[in-house]
Amino acid sequence: MDQYEFVRTAHRNYGKNISELARMTGHSRNTVKKAICGEPWGYKERKQQSFPVLGSYLPIITEWLKKDKEQPKKQRHTARRVYNRLRVEHGYTGGESTVRRYVRMARLELGLDPSTQAFIPCEPDAGREAEVDWGTTTAVLAGETVRLKFFCMRSKYSGKHFVRLYPCERQQAFFYAHIKAFDFFGGIFPVLIYDNLTTAVQKVLQGRGRIEQDGFRKFKAFHNFEARFCNPASGHEKGGVEGLVGFARRNYMVPVPEAANLEELNYQILRQCLDYGSHTMAGRSQSVDTLYAEERGHLLAAPEATYSNIQLHDVRDDKYATAMVDKNRYSVPWRYVGCKLKVILYVARVEIFFGGKRLAVHERLYANNKWSLTPDHYLELIQQRPMSFNSARPIRQWREHWPDVA
Image (cartoon, rainbow, N blue to C red):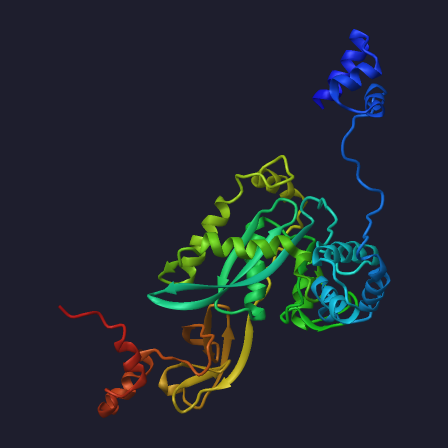
């Protein structure tokens, strides 16, 4: 560009002619003329890429790639496979890089396997949509390492998010997590976006059609929101919450969190969710908290009544003075053996009644074949049969929590 400037300046300001400038710069007269006329010299991209060595093989390659359109995606030609076939079957002696360059161009023209997927930039409305997903993590509760599921809900507009941990992904925990999220956000998003999780979807139909679970339809109708489901194997359709799952695991659960119980751990996570939001997301001019404060006024108001997120069971007290519910056993006072009991299952606890009288409250168990035994329910019976004291399961469980004697 320095000589371009020199030629133009010498000609316009100092009256140098084309011949003189050609001698001074070493460029041809035509090049000097182009510079004077205002055309900078330099590289010009070819209008059409030529392949002198590969030329006679181009129809063969194009035919192979066209046939690929009818083949499974995982069984289509790679550039390396095209090169090897040309070399072995057709005696091609050129370089592999030339083949790769042409295959890349031909694929783009044929619409085959673009190297990068194109996305449409979207600008969501304030307080309209949120995305929902589950993640898995490890935590230490009361000194024991456990695997937990964590529920995530993220606003598409503000990026504000809610995270809460549960022992499982069952429908009851799924609903309770929604209720807690609605409390956190101060309202209900009119549209919630899910993948095809079984707690909400009974069957995936062709296209956007879904047969929803009865319980989910009732929950959705009670809170007046619309559910939108992603296409199968298309997690990018709710990419914001997909990213949140990884963000929460890396930031809220590293190092591995420790707490006395799940409620205490959820309080720790809640504090971090409340603190999140002072930064500005890419493409936005305001912080997360500022956008969140704006969108709260657009959310649907929560119903005055709270959704009855319980499960009722009628069971009979067995010979071990336990009520077996959801594949686990919960003890009641031994005198009620053989009686019909009413059991109310909450997400975190189990309450057992007889004739309107509450007999026992237990922490909810989520594994199988577990026993939750209260020693007080058996002490009178053990007193009558003292030889059973050392082997009694309630005493053995109780002994694990006895304080050390000085």
